[in-house]
Image (cartoon, rainbow, N blue to C red; front, side):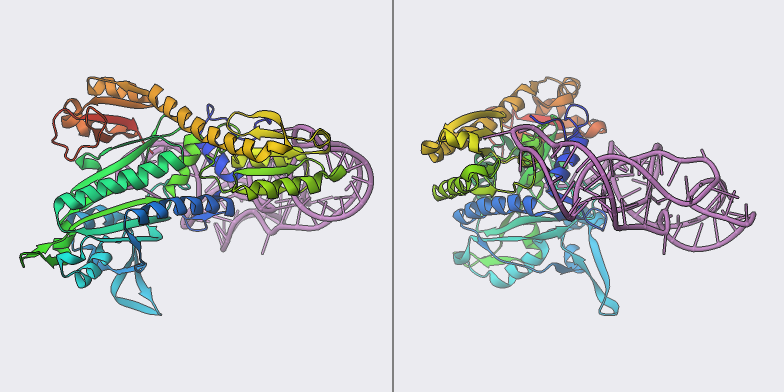
Length: 468
RNA sequence: CGGGGAGUGGCGCAGUGGUAGCGCACCUGCUUUGGGGGCAGGCGGUCGCGGGUUCAAAUCCCGCCUCCCCGACCA
């Protein structure tokens, strides 16, 4: 591996994170505090995530739509808990078109309110249910301490909003999204194991009846909330008069859900798989699964590399050809390593003479010569192996850094560099004492690891961790 | 908002009153290219902003602004 171009993780993890974001050319700060410029490579990863999520969202029956960025301020005030939760971080436009606005306009921090106004117009009959919408957009939350990808003032996300005829149906849908869209994408695409569970009331979405979450463990043992799915009950429906006529002709408030994941997932990817050499992108997710490097363009190596790249692309892989031979080989190798491209195929005159190319896997920094004849099949199998290996390694690390505890004090010690699993009853009354050090209850699970429907179910276990 | 730190070429930094510098990056040429090569030449800065002291201010004084890091809030 190359000499260290990044601050080592063990020396200063936050610094390492910033180094990766910069050196892998993922993003940088925007001119306004907390804003983010997402660079092409970072955006390519986001586009891949969008694609994988969008396919699953649609498979779950939701359709995409788009609602406005600007929302009348009065909408925010219609749901009591919602306004209390979001007011402090909402950006408000009071002046436009050269004069003060009659009613200030907020920039959406989330869209439950405006979408409910339209739900209430559209929804009339139980026959129209469930009503399943999703939108891809940007939202703004004036956060106190921004951090690229993890917590930016403006961020990109998808937000799903649905109406159902019954509580059971709404709840089942919120849980379906949690499992079939979020957990599936995180595990199968991002190769990141997540704990799925119920949020305690203190961590619930403002205005929700229940919030469920996917919690990932980062390389430093801290937790990151990677996605949430909420059961809104009838809270917003009541506030916005979102009603429908039932089969028996009665007026009933819609049962609703909302759910979202954001560009924070890129932060999770960095901190979940990154190492001292930079990012490591799982093959299923990677914008570039393979990069074919021309070591030097002599003796037909340039043409051979182009041909190899075309063949790999022809076998269905996402391939990049790096023929910038005016830049030194070492520099380019380091560059791709920083960007975490899963497999590199190095083509130079030396190996070409023997009908070979050098294949390097990013996850373990291992090199081997491979015959050109079977290259595509070899690389395909290698990518599968890397995908599985990254998930296995992340799962192992997560499990090794998860301890059982009986009391809050034990849990506090145990969560110093990971998760502590403790009986919910042992900490339930002491949530206020967690306080310092960023320690919090990440989620609740049943003893068998399944997802609870209520914080009042018996024998629940709580996962405690320091969190981002 | 509390606690720390910093504003000087694109990036990272040095510079305690006397002609604004270094490393990296960038450009040109030659040479090199199998893990961030070498040599030579070159481009690039009204030193965060406003005032003040002084013959003279990046440097001293006053005021302001911004950014970063650590906490409280959060996808």
